Length: 262
Image (cartoon, rainbow, N blue to C red; front, side, top):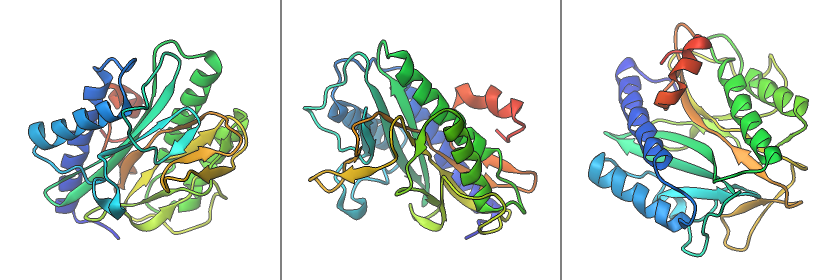
């Protein structure tokens, strides 16, 4: 469950490479692009430029490099040439990368063009909720502290937290113990120890928290058709608190302000 300093260094390497993948998407005009276009672009970049492996492809029989979850899709959206991004959409890209045997996992919700204020607020609140969870991570704290912080922020802003999907331990395997719930009670759950690595990836809905899986067996949507947003980082518990292994360059100032290791 805990990683050695050498293993953490390898995970940090994968995390830095994965952060650069999101940098590529940041530079890409999304309006008019299909989610399959983005999947193809990301695969080429990971394999050809980064000399790494897209860890999601082939996992559990999944055929693509990333999940692309648009508007009311909560998670596990499947890239498609028919799924063309339009002005006003929100879309989450969830991407994994493996380098030298260790995996990093991260996701970001993008605003496509001119997005209505209510959707912007949902996306911003979800991003803040993830960071609220990250800030609780330190040796001796409990996993329930993460979920409690996320749920409290979501409720304050009028959003619901999806309960069917959670964060997870990560390392040489994409999904390891422990599970990281995004709701719960502070002071409960497993005690965090230095060297633990896991993802924090809250999904917040604008409406009710109920979800359902579509006929493709992958795509999860809100039951009431409301918008959903998600953000995710891979983190490590350190002696001083927490290190965000998938931190993106534009987040360094925020992390420093929060006294989070860069």
